[in-house]
Image 1 (cartoon, rainbow over the protein chains, first blue to last red):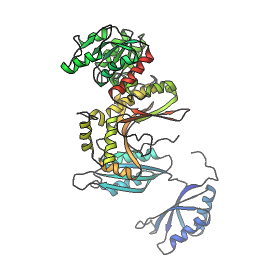
Image 2: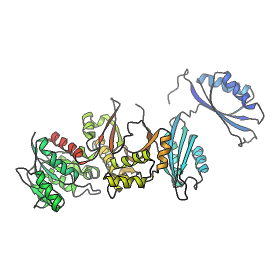
Image 3: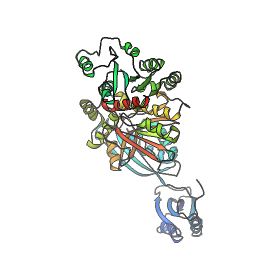
Image 4: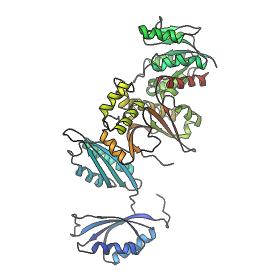
Length: 177
Length: 317
């Protein structure tokens, strides 16, 4: 990708490590909004612990590239441990249908693997199946993918689906003209 | 312009060509089905031929091969599509070109499976070939590509099988499952008793192969084996419901470019130009300087496909 215009807001993701105490999350978000970051999503991974026994939190926000550096600095100044800071952009949405014995083939494992090996994060899932033992079910997955990685994500998805004998109905990625 | 036609194949398309020829100022001098032929250098009477065909299954007293030696300006090849060696269609085209006559194909087999062989025959002949009817029925897909110049089209895609599209449309609209809608389509005559060719994506793939061959301009030759093909039999009604809840739908989409051919059920926005309903077809062309072009219409049927055949005849004479 060509170097972005420095005045253009981009989506950034930071991965923070928080102590499990009241008010910690709010304290960590303050430097972001104080420095002109526009909060977009917060993924509080309750139940997961970092190697140091803290709670990982993934925060997406938009700001100009210049402000991003200031925000990361402000976070560190405030004593928040920034584990990862990138300008990775989850700005392409990919919608796919999965069809087959989704439940029998461990749906949560399927989803975990999609998130794990593809550059994607699951935004939304709708599941539909008819009652009965032998019926297949269908799921509509809305994935957020990083810019330019749609083909990789689809490739990973095809592989996982093939292993579990699931059928993928892919979107037609029409290039906007 | 007047001209004499020899029509091979007396199915829906061949029959319509014979019936509509007069309206286009053409004379039909020979008609053949798989069993027989009728030949008359002064011109045949369509009504008499098809009355006989309906009564005893033959169009005339001659051998079918005799039609190839009749006097004609354009040979119309409208026998059923066959895969692999594409015979007997390919032999018919060969005979016509070796007589230095023009040939118009409605039969996809020779153009999809033996494009290179076909072009060699054209080079050696004073006759030329056209095959608009092989892709998208009445839709002028190939002549549009020709008008733009294949070099100015980067990719083609579309809904190219009316039967599969009818089934998907009905499944989505009525919340019914594949088997149910297929049976309904067979009752209505929209799907054949053996729908494999349509629902497994083979028919759409052949059309995409033809598009890819035209776009490649002989630099690369494609056949059905080069296509990645998936059909609609694995698409359950529940999946269409989920798609609809999200403002989307599923269509059997064929894609063709110089890089290859792919056919399969795909998620598209419900308001996409490609989301045509029922048996309707659409061809979408990406052009180098003029954006995207959408041409939709009837992709199958006797008179519809015959219209494409007769337009080709007009371009050759």
